[in-house]
Image 1 (spheres, rainbow, N blue to C red):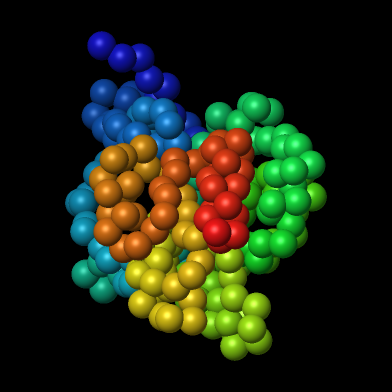
Image 2: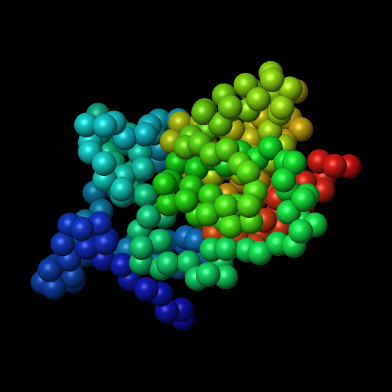
Length: 241
């Protein structure tokens, strides 16, 4: 058997702990996320809906500024809010310093500095992790929060004769997800030279296989700064050939 932590989801998002007398009738959703198995305790499971990322959009301003909401969709004409599991995981299981930051030598830094780097992730927590890891090694980058914006940035950069060299994209994003973004980049002759690294919270070989199918060069499970920097260095080396 395997021991795993159980997280009371209601308590984790500030809605109050599940009462003891409700525990027996509650459910545990077992997930394999960010390199560890975690069970989320919930009071009720109404249904499981299969939804395409294109049917999910960023939350409207009228929903407030909850840090836990990463997207909204409709199921049977009812508004459904999507929780940002990365925020919950970051608060309950903070990254240790070895995973959050990486050190590089001067030669590696000089390899990355000429690269035009674009980071894209809908999660504020993930964007901060990415940004902090590159700030720590003094490497310049651009960052955005969804796939369509990333594609627009890449097209504009290509028109100016400064195409993006390294694209680091989340896979699970509302609207244009990472798979579709990678496919669109590879399908555009002006953008196709970018080295694409897809980033996912899901610990799954399926994600890696699908990433290859859409033209990504690499797929990584979040979050390990050293693995990310090493992948970017491989991309920089390939771009210089």
